[in-house]
Amino acid sequence: MPFCATALRRAALALVLALAAAPALACGPASDCAVGDRIYRIRLPEGAAAGTPIGAVVFAHGYRGTAAGVMGNARLGRAISDLGLALIAPQAAEHDWSIANAPSHSTSPAVDEPAYFAAVVADAVERFGIDPDRVFMAGFSAGGMVTWTLACFSGDLFAGFVPISGTFWAPVPESCPSAPVNLVHIHGTDDPVVPMAGRAIAETRQGDLADAFALFLAAGDFTEDGSETAGDLDCTRWINPAGRLMELCLHPGGHRYEADEVTHALEVLDAARER
Image (cartoon, rainbow, N blue to C red; front, top):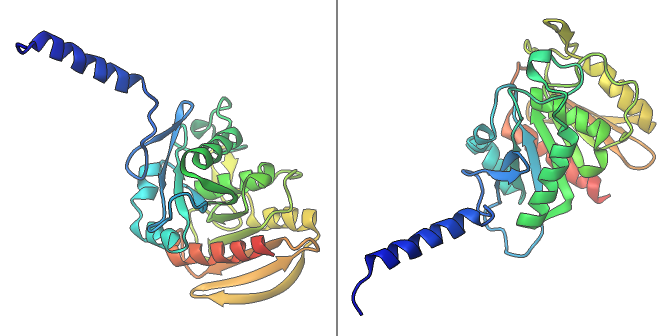
């Protein structure tokens, strides 16, 4: 049969069109996973057995950060993988997470962050077999602020929360329907960007970390349960009658975090989850 270039071109075109019409299932640390009109990225732990449910950490980037930037943090990636957890990096719709009382230039009332994070978790559970009962929420700076917001309004979605160097924008909510939750907060005592007492930015002000803790501790009837050190972290712990845990871990530094500090918090929360 003679070679037919026209037929070959038609077949190739049909294949390209079919692939373009198929759902984009392949995504990971270097490519986007689509959820509606937004995306996230994910890295599964090394050596994860196929078909075995694994836990995950959703780690929110800071102001003007990206999901790709979180995935590019090699130390964080290794630390999370060593815990046998997947690393999920969500992406803000604009320059910053859309949360209450934040500067108007960085938020949009049309962005529903709790719904977006719920969609990310649901998609990761469906697409990658993530264990929905072992998903933790963490974030740095503005990512810490959205972490506190989710702890307040979406507590049932996550097994625990690790906000780092960020809390609510002032004023702190009058109440949090999700409280109490398991939460470990990490902060530098010399942080000039997001001081623990907050600072004014334009017409807004960062919230006071003490007010956020007071709100959650009162909601859960927590009592102080001692202290511990972990590397540079000096941690104070509270427990409530239902076994919920809150911990404030301070380091003598500025606006930064270390991977081993995140793993300490996750190990504390994982232990609390299993109680």
